[in-house]
Image (cartoon, rainbow, N blue to C red; front, side, top):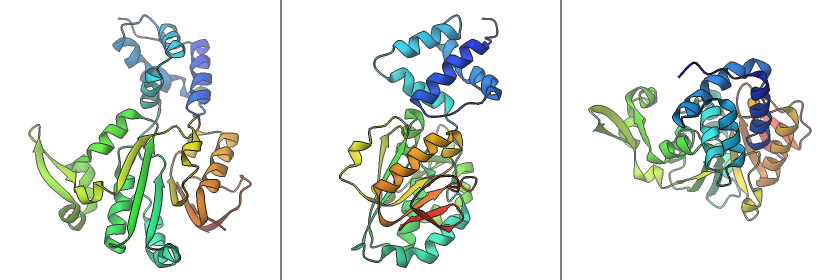
Length: 272
């Protein structure tokens, strides 16, 4: 098959569809990135061009192709205990956060990728508040990364950054496909529920009975335009209990968004 080329007209169609259904705002410079990522799917389906794939996408009533598109477009870069200053802040303020919580903490990892973030949360609390009643909801738009996260299996390279203390306490070293890998301990795994959820188009009424104490949504809003960011932040505000915290990425800020949140540290906000 000849090298596939995404025309500007086709790019505009995908750009609009991705914005409407995933919430990611793509600039004109992303045309080659979209071309590279979608070309794999076009070839996999034995299609002739991107227009054929677009027609399949918009006519798919099952939603399966949209889920696959999410996996292709979304960037899943993560690591254990990412954003070290946020963990330091949390450790210093943990006792204050737990006041009036009746020994319970409800947390949402809103873009959990391959699971390093929610597992880091669970390990952190096991280390610093072992008797706490903790429930962690971990969601992502990509079925592929959710499957990896739920499996809880990590390469030596990925898990190696944790150091021997965490590896020895919360992981089991096993061999898979002639390689050493680390599997997360079931005690940590049981604290987390993994679910698929689209932050832009998802049905937030499923949360109407829930209030979270902390929401992590890091390095996600940078892909959204300002109106989408503002809408999402307001939803987070509503879903947090009074005094609850929102953790975002170090490259993100709420300075241009009207909100009831108060800044407590770099990229950390509190509902007051």
